[in-house]
Length: 131
Image (cartoon, rainbow, N blue to C red):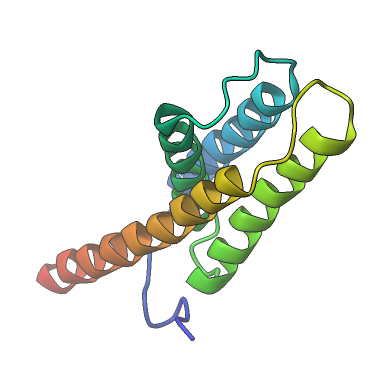
């Protein structure tokens, strides 16, 4: 398991608070945009790229907001939120439907975001070692 102690991320109250604001804003924006009625376009690579990028951003923002959180939890929580939004699309009568392909893109973004956090952690450790 990848632990936070093995992979330290920047830990500064102001920085982490700003990341928290970004995290909340991303979650609110993604949720709102995911639940408004939209014209069905079927399978679109652009749509999947947008899902990937959105949940990549959520994972990075979450990991930077809570620097002691294990990376596995960053992935699980981000992918879970993506799944919850997909279920809501299919059950709230917004004219949208659940999509397994969307959830795969959400999860891939979450995993890639955690990998980016790992790379940030390595870079952070190298920079701290230079001081």
